[in-house]
Image 1 (tube, rainbow, N blue to C red):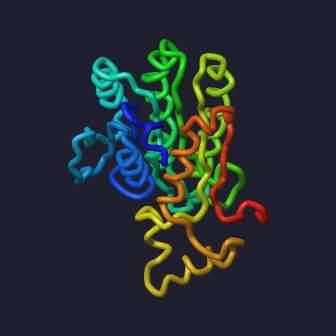
Image 2 (tube, rainbow, N blue to C red):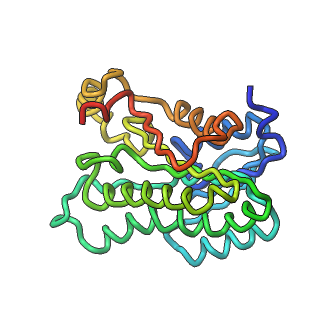
Length: 245
């Protein structure tokens, strides 16, 4: 349906080896885009319109160097910041500084680095899209531990400020706030008899977990012409979970 929308578009995605990022990558490829994908893990797929890089994005100097190489060769039309990690739900007193810093180094700082790498080109072309992966943990407490919840609140604030600063330049910048998504990052919830996964589903008005593809579909909509007047939004995709929390 959106194939013509993304033909000849260059998409840069972080966190593309599995879960939501993998579904986003495959959806853009299916719809005609050229995708540049980054992940700490090997992205084990071959496609004529796919270029992959294996990189730990918490190594910020290496990320900056890679992005310089990429943007020297390519104009990035759409940036999708999906890479992220959890924190095992530790409260502040159980979070050491190293773990705190690592969560922020993965979840927050790379968004600043990638945005600053692609924004000059987008501004020069008077158009572009950025979608940052937030979380329902960015709206309230309890969706993660101290570090994770802080990181997702920061992503929402950064997304809104970016949109405020660059919407007049023709750049569309939004965030997605997933709830319970069945991805490898949440595999522990399905361990054993899956009691935790069942409990989460029961607490969700939709009574189920979402699939990564549902988040990918929302992403494609937010970067399409149909979403042209949406800017600075944080869109929940949580089956109604945030309505009661």
